[in-house]
Image 1 (tube, rainbow, N blue to C red):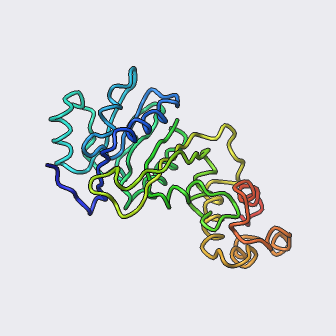
Image 2: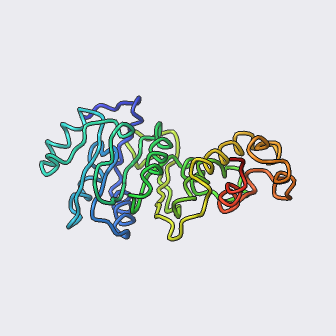
Image 3: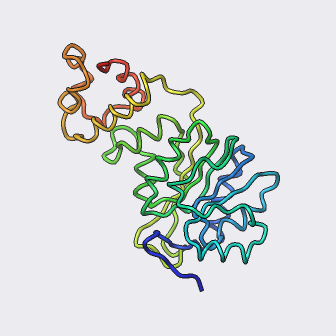
Length: 251
């Protein structure tokens, strides 16, 4: 009997149908290296290690789960990284895919680390809290469209795949879950610099109730701020709008 560690956001997936759907969504992508985040009791792992011709690794922080996985899946020897995912270095020299039932308490931090690794990511299939998944995939004009939406969609095409009932987990979480898939954008968005783009997006949404002119006035010269687009609020701008505006920012 494995110990549930609430501090690590652990809820073990027990629904085999859901596990198979996650893996099916993953293998539609092209990859040769694969990292699983938070394998826990191995609900996904047992399918992932059967994918032919890939280099597989899994990162797990909980020592009890490490010992359980090694006891039940001996083929994981030398393939487990016993660390906090947020602290690890890039796990492969080559490009790789990422999959996992992500711990909900750090799922946004996991996403931002994946964005940091964007040039090496071929595909991501992740289980998130439903509201987080909806936020990541939200489009302009939606009230939940925000920083996470724009920064993710600037680099990845986001697919909201399916929702997962609480009873698919042991113990059931208090929230519903959803699985999304990220694939790198075929055409990268032009932006002044990533640093400027990130600063613009975060500044705009940190005061999202204000029109853009008032929210980001410190980032632009007055003649630029006079443009019509600055009469809008941040949630009304597309990812492409933000990237284009980054070129107009003050040096």
